[in-house]
Length: 166
Length: 166
DNA sequence: CTCGCTGGGTTGATGTGTCAACCCGGCAGG
DNA sequence: CCTGCCGGGTTGACACATCAACCCAGCGAG
Image 1 (cartoon, rainbow over the protein chains, first blue to last red):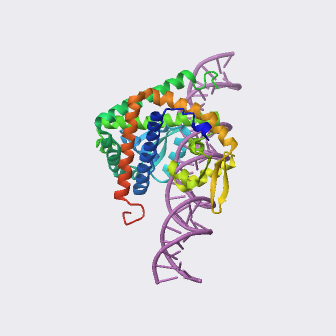
Image 2: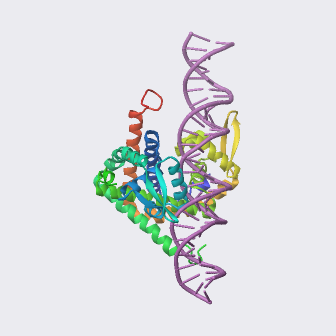
Image 3: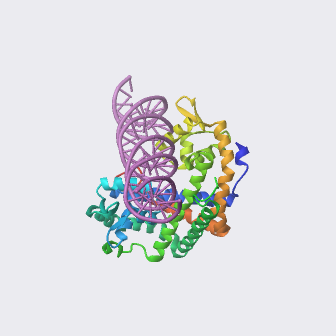
């Protein structure tokens, strides 16, 4: 298999750093997700929805607002809200005739209140405090640059249904 | 919902940096995964297996070696290898009586050869080059610390099947 | 008015990840 | 010998994400 492995598409340092990043990504995510699931029966997706709802003044939002906040695809949102409603974490209320509002239930509120501090504590112990303020802020800045680069690319290279690009 | 939102479990800077990280994570992953899928019909999981196999001298490994390399759960590995075999990317060969070896097929080799440079190029454009060498290496170092912290915690706090901890 | 488009939202098929349970060969203790 | 455990691997049920197709209200062009 040397024919493949002999052509390093990233140099050694870069490769190592990239793989460290990937491993951290997975390790951290798995760790956080598992605890959230085990202790509170919530997935990270549940958590994200609940956080957004609980941060709104009224505890109720339209699905597309949640979509903008979370950057999820609309079908993912729809499926997930359906599942969350089945579990009693949220409710869909038909107010505006056609577009239902997503409402945080008592149970959903209780869930987020219970798990949020614990979750944030873990984020702190395993990420924020490990990096320290300086490196954390630098990483946040790097992250914004990466996001901006990708978004710019998507806009210039492949404007989503305007003209040919593949 | 102020009762929840008024208790910032991370301070503003930390919160912002953490959310930037999360967004980068999702944006980058989605971007890379989508292109890999669209252009080569491969998922990131496929890619990871193929890379590992192609980096071995012989193009064949036992499943648990792949498991150690990728850190996947064994059931995930089993399911995924089954699916990859169905698509002709790998083959399971029963050599050691009981434990089958995973073999890279011609088709799997062709796939990884075709997509790896393109994928690496994207990693470079959207991540490596955006950060630059210095910040990249620093991030790699940070990542290793985070990983080490989580692993240490798992060992001390919850030694996987030794004694009670829930 | 009607046609067709747009955009929020739903649905179903499919591929994927996780958990828990299981299969089975090897091996240590009785 | 049997019994029970260990560990690599499989399986089935379920939760989840993505894609493509669809539904339907509003709206602008004809």
